[in-house]
Image 1 (cartoon, helix red, strand yellow):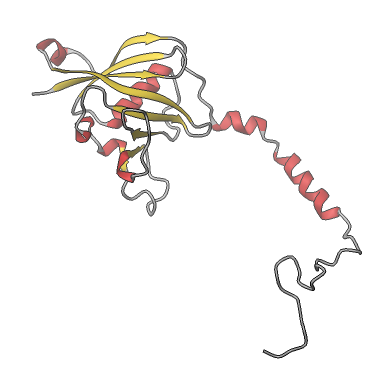
Image 2: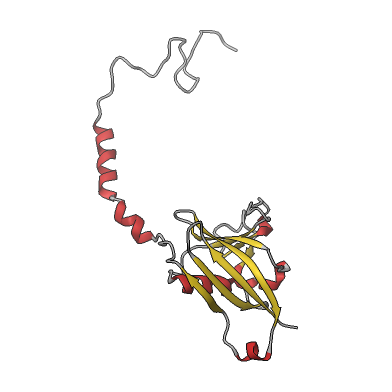
Length: 193
């Protein structure tokens, strides 16, 4: 029988959203529902981590559910949101995830399954996903535009130009007192080895 899963999405402050989805929905559907409930840009890189009961993340790649793979070699064992149904991870009440919604500033939401129930006739007619509780203001999502406003590309180039203009110190020849240079080479003791 089809199930309805209710997720509580929260942060360390007073932000809370509760979202219901059918259990055959994907993690991409959950991602999109969270993004819409927060009015975030859903195209930014995000991921879910399946955690333990203390919100601790393991380093097992199969516990990572990615929006997209950035590196096929190191992330080959990671799951993809669009390919992973919610029921694939055997959802149970109390199951916890971290949802990294803002990788640029490493911000995350705590996501917990708070209810699993059988799908009713009323649910069959309803549209899912649906947000059933909304409290607090979502934290600001950092975008690439936000970062680029703080970054002055020309200032960085000017600093580099200043380095090129520095005059070498004639009293420093990159050799230490033992005859070796700073990289361990350059010493010639006159012997052939």
